Amino acid sequence: RFGAVMCCCGPCAMYRRSALALLLDQYETQFFRGKPSDFGEDRHLTILMLKAGFRTEYVPDAIAATVVPDSLGPYLRQQLRWARSTFRDTFLALRLLPELDRYLTLDVVGQNLGPLLLALSSLAALAQFVIGGSVAWWTVLTIAAMTMVRCSVAAFRARDMRFLGFSLHTPINIFLLLPMKAYALCTLSNSD
Image (cartoon, rainbow, N blue to C red; front, side):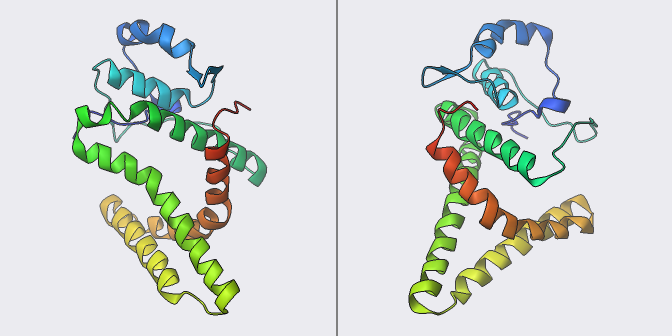
């Protein structure tokens, strides 16, 4: 719709050679806060393409094979790299976003604020339980309802009921990924 996919996924992204040649120097010398940054290159290249005025588009029938983590340690390291990359390149893209579309600006800001609001809600519910001894039922029900709505919309749009199973990702998100994203935000300059 907008010609501005914000991250062309590495394993299945394709670029015009002429477009890549124009941006190769910027792409190969990726720095963040004066230090070389060599991960999140797919998101970084996508932002460079958009800044240069090129379109990035989603192709729904594209198929690609990739290697994915098969245990918790490598999965969390992958997610840490991705979180740092997302935060870094969101900062780089903030000036670009209003030029593309106001909805995209809202979407990207929401993708970054959403996890932070979820973390704050979870911490407030935990504090209420620890200090007051009561369960924050409204917080729990709101998170559960938002999860089911999101998964139901995905299942309906994809016409695949398996997307409802993605609701099981919410506890993983709250207890593993949100703390890791907070750590990523505090260690953006780390390239490990």
